[in-house]
Length: 356
Ligand code: 13P
Ligand code: SF4
Image (cartoon, rainbow, N blue to C red; front, side, top):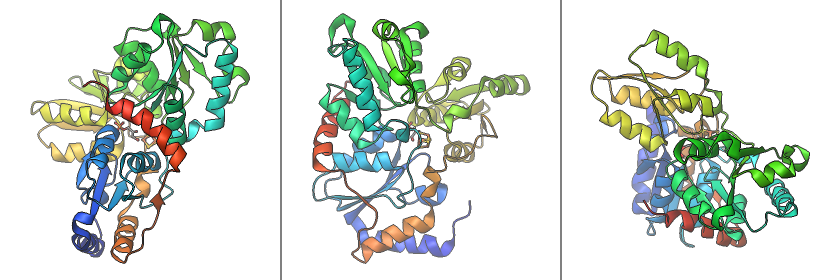
């Protein structure tokens, strides 16, 4: 991906003109042409903390997707404005849990007599109103870096009968509960918002410990054990490293699982000559392969594409957003309404206060 030199020069000039007034955050899945301008890069947990740590920046330009920019707006001060360079940079997983659907599920759980035992936990990859729902109902936000600690916290909230409603990524919820915390697949049920009663019987709901929302990532959900088996046959020394948004059987067949920060640290610490197949977003895998020419790094499945919404943030959009700020025009501002912000902040703050 060679960047257009004229656009690179314009991006640099806009950054220089804005100086300390702007702080650019870049998620690890961003394109090279954009991430080169980030003041900090990170996974969604690190970026949420970093956004909150720059109160002097008037503008936060978020190179990532919509739910991340919303979280940055919630965590930053009233004088700070968050900009998402392309408003079409959403997340298909976040869109799989809508507030009316979640409220209907919550009511069904109350009708089953579970109102005092279910704690909602939402993955960061959810809209601000779902985070606010969790804040209002004694729940918490988690990311792929802290899902286990967040679930442990949740299971302590309502005594021994506690159940968790995990939104919206069934895979992260299942992988964390079963592979990290000792729950079994039988302890989990999947709530399908498109079926009456979620497609779960009241008995099954009462028996379950973990109620998983039927959502998934359209990128990580495509990796399969078939490619893992093929790679192990062709590259006998390969170590398979995957993100916990991958399906349970893929994570089971891998050697290591963790968030994007974990994946990066693992590769940085790996010895020269080691061989890796990585199951996460392609921009990050390609960057790791280029940064570590002494190691063999391949993408887990060449048929899986970039995250199309992460890739919406390209250099022309970035330059447009930055030059608009230089001209005194705030374009594509992401602003969460005050009531949603208040409740979502409760759930986000509970996450930031978790140990570790
Ligand atoms: P994190 O590892 O940052 O949680 O990234 C996962 C992801 O899919 C972000 O959209
Ligand atoms: Fe959403 Fe998956 Fe893209 Fe992340 S990689 S923004 S979870 S679709």
